[in-house]
Image (cartoon, rainbow, N blue to C red; front, side, top):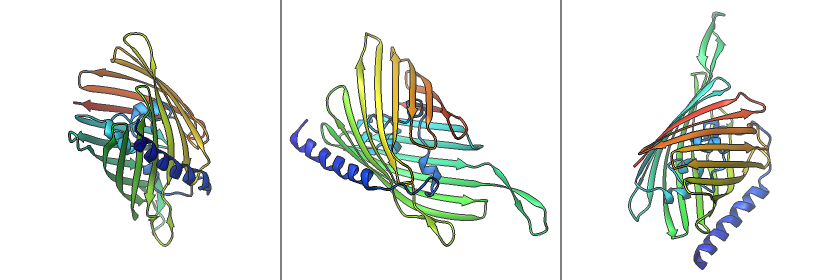
Length: 304
């Protein structure tokens, strides 16, 4: 690792830690833009959402755009999630490496809430969708030095409540990923820095979130590979949370994952598995949330 790379990372880490430390928790439920909170990819969910220091696939667009610098060739990912308070979440994204210039990435996310009853003027009831959100993301990541990748992602969010009231917001993520050695990577990212989302008179801030994470490749026997990950997370409306994750691969074909999230409304145990064959990868994960419904997430990835 070069001196310049160390200086850049130290500066970024210091700024992020200041934000994480000084940001007071304003109370659960005070931030808008729930779609921006949804974790991308079944692989990361199975690892307890400890992915800011890993971010080595196309989902780096969400977890840490600095990790896009690790993506080579063309990668695409489609994810579907069900079980979160009768809502459904869908996401599709693609990343493409521009040789030595860096990697570009585009993403589209949809969140459909459950149905609710509303009163008509004549006293009858009608069923409407409680919430419908769509977000478009674009990002770019490149190596500033051989050991340090930096990335930026921008997002446009449109949210509609009860099929009647709509609002828009714009946000950005800034991330860095440092390779300490062949086994250890460290990532830091600031997510959802942007405008308020305002449906009528008053607006709600977006879920501004800071993540500091690390990933460690574990040396195992031939045909066996392991990964340990940890994220420290601070959101503007929540206290600090700690995400822990582990991943085991056999022969590059079958993966098993386990994770745990603490200190948030969605805390609990997560687990999952994956299978990789040639240019396709399938991943499944579930989360045993303590306060909300259990979640199930499936992803299909194309890796070329």
